[in-house]
Image 1 (cartoon, rainbow, N blue to C red):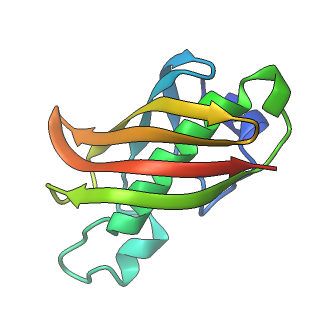
Image 2 (cartoon, helix red, strand yellow; image 1 turned 90 degrees about the vertical axis):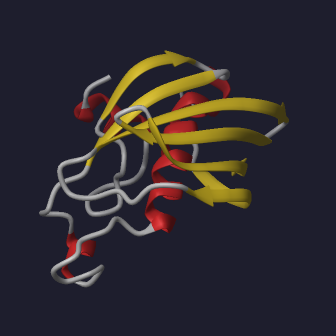
Length: 139
């Protein structure tokens, strides 16, 4: 999926849209996506001047948005809005900096009605940057 196609699925827009491309997608099961991190991101103005590092919470947000695409591509959730229900077991292993391509790999674990969970992994050049278990709600 291209950025334009992603915007037809996700309600997020600049500056909060954190997924640039979808490489693989099995609706309701898993997704492999990318976020191209550039120096033009607004958050780099203050995080941190002279030493730009992508905030960890935004890496988790990128993972959640990727997972949301996998859900929202299911017919029963098309046009709905995804919300965080919780985040567990978050670990940050590597700093993400301008010029990095963040690869977002999300596998949906459980789904009951409009609530579910997923395991998420973000990498840069094959190196683990962040992992988390996500809980979500679709309304």
